[in-house]
Length: 258
Image 1: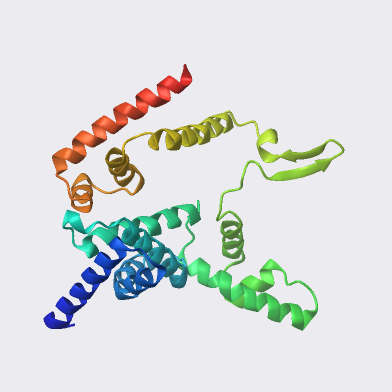
Image 2 (image 1 turned 90 degrees about the horizontal axis):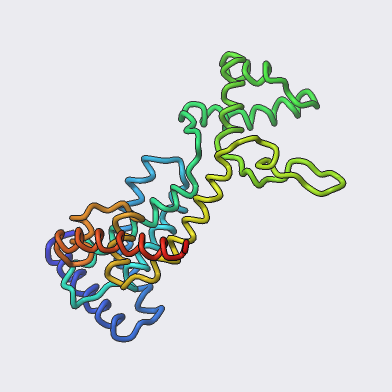
């Protein structure tokens, strides 16, 4: 895109942002999403090379971040919208990947073999009218029997198993895995979940600026320099807000224990 076209696009985006700030509407928001879709594509291109997630899913998630940026953007702060929006897009994608992330990373070769095995199983089942054995599948894939067993095990264990999953039905009702596994850390896990809820409740009690800084630093993993650019404040102010916010959170959460 040449310089003239770029400047015209920036001017159009600026005008739409000003209109949206004065009178928000779905029509204006959709126009802004369409004009800034390239920011989402750029981020998705990077992350799609780092993970196995479907690109269309990442594009949709990235657009959610873009919409959030459009809704929060303030022209009066003088920030470039592209610089402002990228942390929102990136943060939304990162949160999505963390939520979807698996405990065990499976090698790309094994993922390809697992997909290939699906077709092989179907073919062998139709040919012999029975479920194929592991040895037959491994032979069809051209790999050792032991490697196929490792692939199967990795695929089964690719995601964590919830400790709340019911695994036994008896006369007295179902039993969860957490009740059967003698793991002293399970109680710690429950306490961590409770602490997270309390932390969220404490965050909403902070003033807007302090809360925004803490969310950017601790939830979106931005550096203090990135936060400063993102919010249009100095790095020194970011540092002070972090110290202030952490101190206030401690006070709020400690008071809740009394």
